[in-house]
Length: 287
Image (cartoon, rainbow, N blue to C red):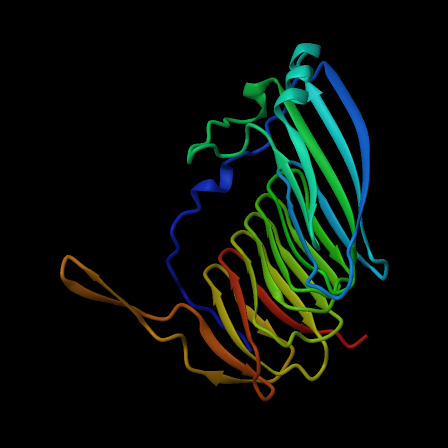
């Protein structure tokens, strides 16, 4: 199957927000942070990880503990600015019942609805957190990062919600369903069991490649602007999304559906694939 259609998207103004600017660093400080949390019983388990500068890697484990290994790097123009970095930025690691929160905080965060962050260079320092997490099986997770590298997920079995602004998202050995988006990078996902709930896979500037197991049955929705869509599986056509209606100055305006439909196998959960400047590949993983 090869599908292509033209759409219009609003510009992503935030694509350049927080873009990394090189520092003429005179001072560099490094430390490794290790911390573990125990998840108890059969209650819902959840990880919320919100990074800004740095990579994130999440690996599934059979343990009942969530284990963090965090490499922190502070680069600064002077010892004074390094001290300012210690005062103004920090990493929150907290637990509430069976929910774990990891949150990188600092002047790059919006305060009172406004964001006065104009890049690390204006601060005279940069703080980076490269975060590795071991996650117990069946834990749901929401993970975000902005700059500094890719988001990597391995051997997890919970629902997921993933976002990377200036990097790719790579997932392997996945059981579960959820949302994946990379603004300036590709998306690659390999399932060990086909999802049984709705999923979304998207990128503005990158290919979207998802490997499923043989026997996939799903209702796919596909949208691309500068690319094509391919599938290893036999497909049949489905109606496109119905048009939407809105009223502007008393006039009714209809917009045609953006996603093109394709039924895979006997149909099933809705799987959305969305790439603006790249191809969509729905692939069969036999090994």
